[in-house]
Image (cartoon, rainbow, N blue to C red; front, top):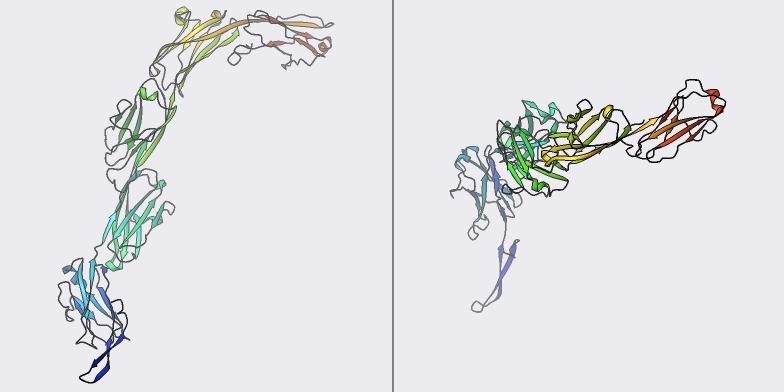
Length: 543
């Protein structure tokens, strides 16, 4: 075979002494030709052709076709076959066997057809050449890729068309009978797809803006080889919602996270993922408890309870995830994954200490942070006694209202009871933080300030004295002139300010008014001295 690839002439040379023949030469011809008959994949809606191609043959010769039953196909069996011997030109020809559509009913995919021929030039000595091919019969199938996805997200659905041997002639996607590209080009993206390996996949991408309700789309195809012009297949896109909200929680008690699902076609399990990206097991009851919830009319709420002992070992900010996939269309639907940030907060009580003018109303407070709900109890005490038992008219207690992980409770002390430095205690109870009767001391200091009216002459400098007593820490005094402007230490032509010396809670600040200033003053002008606690400057008022 390796050397038998072209027409060749060989010579046999013989010697026969009895015939007195020495090196008698005789030519012998060995001609070759090629026959090709390829396997074929075919549809059954139209007549199909099988071609036996011959090249390099010395003389035209008829081709015989053999059917799957190994019988010769007759040229007269025109209900089932048509044989065309082809035209012989320069050593080549192509014989065609046309299989009529009606014949496919009695054929099977995988049937073998053969073409055979023999040299017409050297018929006596040449062998028959037989070529076989396998005929694979296709059936048209359209598979819709129904999906169920998260509402308000992009979704791509498709029709997978198999059993074809060429590109589809046309593809259209419709919703409620209308071509989707006529509805909104920006919300729908259609791809007809590309033919390959006897199939073609056409896709429709539905943008998030219009993917908010269960919808039915229809792909329409045309295929000339299957003699169809408007074959339609419905494709479903169902949507559902998943909610998992960020939470701030106290670590004193077990805490629950809830993954809420609505609009789901069929119940499906929820998987919970921990901050290490590991699936949480139902058997890990020392750390977690998973409740899948009850599926009712498309909705359910899956709860992950995190045990208090586990909370203590989590970072202050941790990400938990719930995920699920449609049980109605699991093959084509994507997983829906929702994350939430769990912020762990610890209870903190901040006292708002104050120093105010004696015998004035004052309000002090405790700011409680690191909670996720209203405190269970609040009590204010003085010397261990609930202030509401001391004098209801002199004390006003407000437990405060929870909001933004905090609650501020206040104690109003009336002027009559606010005449000496006092220590109060706010006592709170927070069950979620496992704090019962937690005390926090709040200090309310008082001091006195005196600045007497004065009758003066204008011929000499005059002193005004602001006397402070009972002050916890030295604090500068600011003097205010009749125009309500602060008097500067540098205005020495008109004033001299002396802060005085702070000794054991007392000091006297002096404002000297220079004689020259009286020309611009009027009788009954008002001067002021002003100061604020230096011990509790943030929370204390100006006096």
